[in-house]
Image (cartoon, rainbow, N blue to C red; front, side):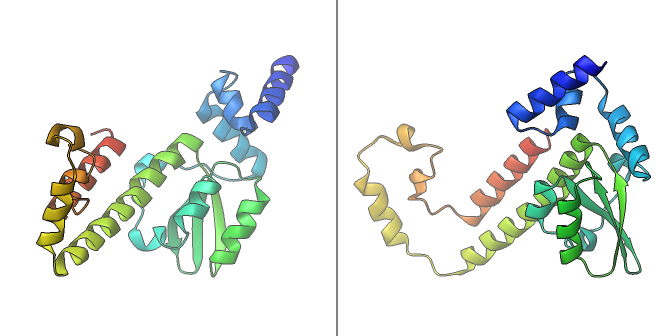
Length: 193
C-alpha cells in the first residue's frame, strides 16, 4: 500500500539505508521480487550469481572498494564489453565511476544485493587471502632476529595464558605457517565453513 511505502521511505531516510533494503527488511517484498521489479523498470536482465563462475582476470577489472561501495561486481567480459551485476541499476554515480575505471563498453545486469555481497566476499575475499599469504611467505624469506623475539618475550611479566591468542606470545612476529593457518581459519569463518 501507499502507507507502507511512505513508511519505508521515511525509515530509509532516517536510517540512511537504501529504500530497496528497507523494503525487504520490512517484508513488503521479497528480495527476488524487488530485483525483478528493478530490472524490469530499467529494461535490464537479471542474473543469478550463485550459478556463475567469475574469472580472476574479470574480478581485477573493478577495484574491491568501488565494487563494495556501490554493491556491484563484474560478471564476465566478452571482447571489449564488461558485464557488471548491480543491485541498483539507477545508481548513476556508480555507473559513472565504473565507466572511468573500465576501458571498453559496459553492459549491466541486475542481481540481488545479498547475492552480490556473497559474491564480493567469495571473490574479493579469496583474492585478499591469496595476497596476504603471498606477503606472509615473502616476509618469511627475510632474515629473522631470534634474539629480539626472546628479549620481547622476557620483558612481559604476564603469564603465557594472558597473552595467548593476542599475537604477543611470539612477540608479534608470527611465523608464516601460523599466519597461513590463521588466514585459512578466517576465510573459513567468512565462508561459514
